[in-house]
Image 1 (cartoon, one colour):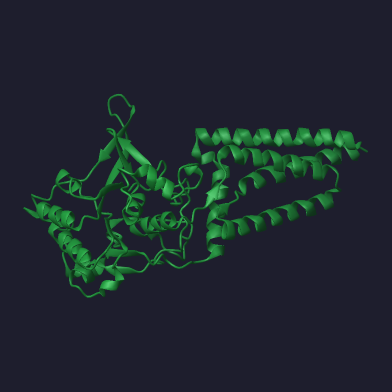
Image 2 (image 1 turned 180 degrees about the vertical axis):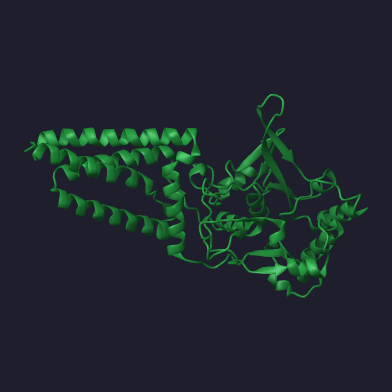
Length: 393
């Protein structure tokens, strides 16, 4: 029979051993994402939490104008479309009082060869509206000669860039499981002494009358995103794909909508047609639920920012600390319980932690990661039970 003092010492040693294994797992994950077991667990759990929470109402201030099959059939079947057509769209939306017009369409190359004079027509429409966001992209490439990483910036053509209200970066990063769960970090990308905010952030800044490039600091303070931004970047999805209703691009061009549908709203324009290959999985995606169009992902990011419905989570360091505390607490618990009681306590701990995670996610906007619990408690239980079996037999 072990004395209470010795049980405490053994519990501490077991918890340190398990914590060491967690540290090794974290180190392997940094070397190769394929070994990031903790991240794999937490990504899967995030999907469960979103699906258990269920669908919520789409933000009424955000409208998607879709480049869909109907628009292709009725407007122009060849892509890219003429910028002059986009000019008609901008003029219509501006006439109806749209507050922000944001294009998730690349304008990085001149259209003069295909549609002479159309770039100037589009630029003039953008200037008249005064509220148009145009996208840009950053790409991380390897120098073919040196092999060093390089940053490639792909802005809109100058004629269009000089007339738009702001430029926003449309890069969307996927997690190791392929899902899109976070909005861009950092909040803005710097290139040649110019700050370029994320596309949704630029759009929300325009909506709030804070210029997303010249007044970036004020915008981040308004959105309560100064610090710690990196731990609050989870997209608070309203629901699966098609939660946000869409208006066909064609309906805007032919004027077959009510002005109230777009008046004083954020209008995001992007492709929903499958042939454009702009679909990505989200935490809601499954075999029964389709992937989400990029423009709807941006809509969810914009809604998260606009309503400040952030989902905070723990930093990597805090996750390790939580794993250590859980390992120590469970080791002390298991060393003083019989194996059957210890197994029941482990199940009770798992159930209680899961219930707390669900409550925090649904009501407090906090994602309590499950990986510290799953990486710490089961190994501690097995080692504690094995040790007691060998010493008390």
